[in-house]
Length: 165
Length: 386
Ligand SMILES: Nc1nc2c(ncn2[C@@H]2O[C@H](COP(=O)(O)OP(=O)(O)OP(=O)(O)O)[C@@H](O)[C@H]2O)c(=O)[nH]1
Ligand SMILES: [Mg+2]
Figure (tube, each protein chain N blue to C red):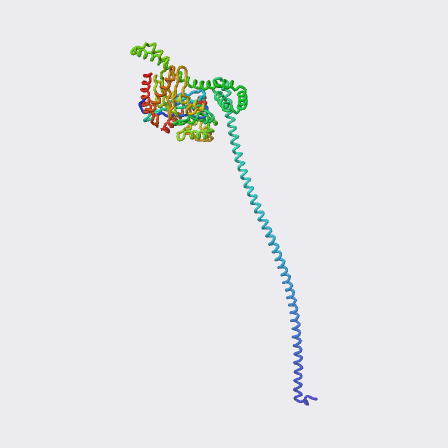
């Protein structure tokens, strides 16, 4: 490990169940994509050191098991978060119909904390399908990702890293 | 008398007379002429008069005609007036009609839009049916391959489990409440007795589950540490003269500080760490500890002085000491008596007063290294006295 100064930050991934939170983290941290769905019970914690120009960012990533509604999650899991990744599944409308309500809840809970909204499983849609889905999304996401192909996964975490500093 | 015998006078007179006669005759003729003429004139006049009369008559009738005409004009004017009213009415009706037509047109347009939307929906629906058909095809294929079937069905089953979990109260709540209430009333004592250990067990099993992974890794480390400690004991006994077996027993029955974590309360970020065995993933352990702590405190609605204090597993204990912005978790192996615990508490309070009284702005390597170093020194001291 380099002897650069490092800063620790807490990042939480939230969103409905089965949208790919665990898969995104797995892709980012372990470069692996788990094909079999195992729902996350409670919370799982991972860590990744992101090397930036003048310092290392020690990202402690909380993978919070998905619930239909964000308010079901213990409030204290949100506390002290420096960044949020809100994940929904582009192919499952029920995973993004609550998005506005959820984002408001997050913002009330964590005012001023950067939030990145990602539409995941983009590999399952072609251009036309993506355009059609975009039309019914209540909120325009910051990024479209795929844990399966790794598309935009690093970019997404980097983007959040920069917003947190 | 002969001419010759007539006096002159007489003659003259005669002439005169003749003349007068003649002239009278002439005059008479003249008068007659005039008379005649007058008569003619009179006749003309009469005719003229007649003409005037008839003219007057004509004028009279003409006037009548004019009057009639005027009347006609008047009537006509009236008729025109009525007609104008009718035109106005008609115009008004026409406007109204136009408005209605506009209204209808708007309705028609709306209706057209609705039809259009409906058409789109139908198309979407068709599309969905198509997709659904495809999915059913896929699904059919999936069913034939048991592995794929499992993978496909898993999320649905999980979703259902969530649903049942979330709506359990709505679906079964009333019945449950009723029967539970009855039971409570009938056998209050039994019920409390039955429930008490169950609640305890639930909490324990959750905590135990969450700790199993932690336990595994720590146990692994303990095994290796034990042998190192054995070596150390041999060295120690060599210097102190105390027998190695004695030291080993002391270690088994005494308490050993395995790890100390200073953790930010809200974020679970690690502020400082002392680890006897150089644990690798201390950051993640800190997060896990925090999640467990937060979960149990929130689930059982702890007030600040009811916060989680110890977590026990096997012969190890995690003692938690809460401070305002952070908490300190100490992993201890061996037996802990109350004397040891209070000594540890005092030690931690002293340490925090000395080294952690400044507010923490940022958790970075500088802070972490500084505090960890002091923590290590302070625990060497602590163990020494122990
Ligand atoms: N095709 C595709 N599948 C994905 C992608 N990301 C995740 N999946 C699949 O979706 C399922 C759910 O993924 P997880 O990462 O477990 O979902 P999660 O959000 O962590 O779910 P919970 O833990 O229940 O909240 C798994 O079967 C993954 O293989 C993706 O980008 N593309
Ligand atoms: Mg998960």
